[in-house]
Length: 383
Ligand SMILES: Cc1ncc(COP(=O)(O)O)c(C=O)c1O
Image 1 (cartoon, rainbow, N blue to C red):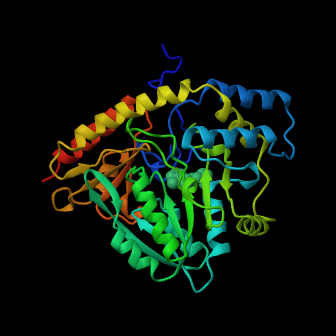
Image 2 (image 1 turned 135 degrees about the vertical axis):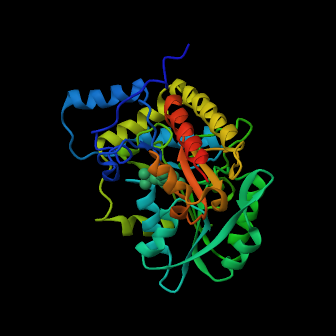
């Protein structure tokens, strides 16, 4: 019997929650399923870590200890079969700041930033943030998965982007890129001399049990311009603590990245350091229980959605972010209609995808059932 019960309802209102205390909900009863965090209590080992820090009561500046460096190195080897050196690690406050810094550092003002779409919104917004132009190519459906349109990808690479932003597993849509796809990405980026920034924050949230996460860094030589980003925060639901690591094998790229981060990135907090350390060294009961729960939520939503005329969802290989296509000729502005009926999900447009909604399924089954009832009611009201 597992110690963890993910059916436990935890009231997150009035906790300064980005998800639950959204000012848009003022005075209304809205079920929130937008922001990518989970409604679940974290592992006991992590609450103990926070308690120990609180009991000690001193929170000054902190350093990343050797034990954390070794623990991440071990994790990358054991989980993704990639041999890395600890001096390749650069500790950063979060992956989005890391991607942004890399884009502003390594993309010249005449170059572009290349991303597949739809994609996690910072991947396209970053171009505006750092004043560079954006190049995109489409993901297409193939054999029940969202994959790259490699022809479009190559055409965009010909326009000289400075970086290619690789989201693996992909948010939204949940694709875990396989070894063949990764080999093709490397060949193309190598041919057009494009740096790869690989965001692997969802690597441990594998819903399809036959799928394995592959780190692109494993197949790149030390000379290849690339940065791979990892974090424990998405897996263990500690995003509010921050903390991530950039693996930068090439010393010139590493030095330049560090130089440009100085005075901009804060030192990591004691809380984030100790939370990462515990996440990497505790036993995996919490994560094992979580994945079983998420798979069952996934299956519930998947079978509901795919039985509705005008809705379609491909199975998620990873992530807890369902990507649902709707037919606007049948369902109108489905996201807005759901919101009017009390369910908040994200509009596909936020990710540069039209006629989609993104639904966060990392919630109790009771919440998901409520969301499904609201979806059904909204569909029934369709004239
Ligand atoms: C693909 C991806 N990268 C990065 C992040 C956020 O990373 P961080 O909080 O470390 O900036 C998210 C959060 O949803 C994400 O989905």
